[in-house]
Length: 325
View 1 (cartoon, rainbow, N blue to C red):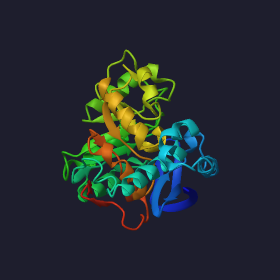
View 2 (cartoon, rainbow, N blue to C red; view 1 turned 90 degrees about the horizontal axis):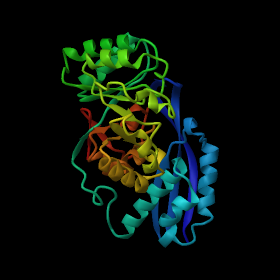
View 3 (spheres, rainbow, N blue to C red; view 1 turned 30 degrees about the horizontal axis):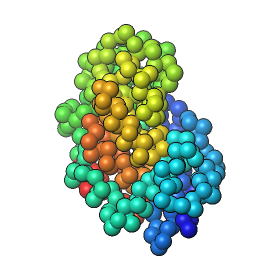
View 4 (cartoon, rainbow, N blue to C red; view 1 turned 45 degrees about the vertical axis):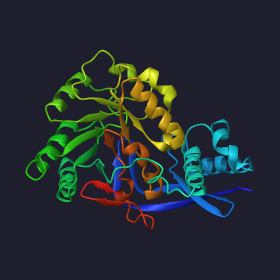
């Protein structure tokens, strides 16, 4: 008999984290534990209000699956019929991956996939004044960051980016910068913004317009490649993104786990998109499950544990802007 349980855990952040939709001082995660024939495996998800999720709704979904977990041999295959893509399915799917690999005597994910020893990950600069954002970027670069992800809203876009670029120029001029608008630029002059940002040597811009308004990106120049985040959850979303974006951001909490994430990765590449592997705020338990795709992605943003005041015991090791395996 398989036993599936879920608990709510809260992790404080090292500093307030601000994006275009608001600020946070902690992250709420749901940890799933699966016990079967003496083996225990775990998975983690982060319920996300933007997608209508709460800790309570995700926990109820997990309890629903637990009531259908009599036969582990086919639960993994039937999971997409029991739950739609989202946080709850992610936690269960990743726990099942760990369980099944442990049953084979394989360490997931390191022995299950070809994962390189060091993966460059973005370090995230949250929204604040240009001066404070510049200071945070400088701190990251002094610690060896190779890639900065800068959160922005619709205000002071160019001023903030210029301040960051100037702050790191003397110590890390080769550090790449990607920008994340979190859907906040839909009412701006995108032509002008994109052109000005291209002059600041920006590597990529993530989700400048709201999901459902992606057509605003058609027929205008993209001097900086654009990446779909909120607009891309599963492989079924890809067809509507052609011509709007050059890249897609895969997150396990959106795809509903590693299983669909691998499908999304494969189909996206077939259709000509490049891959970013991203994350919600969370601990190393969640980031570890994303490593199979991160190992191949063009851009990786798995710095969730770095933003926490403390991670789980025996978490991933972050050093000089890398995840060190």
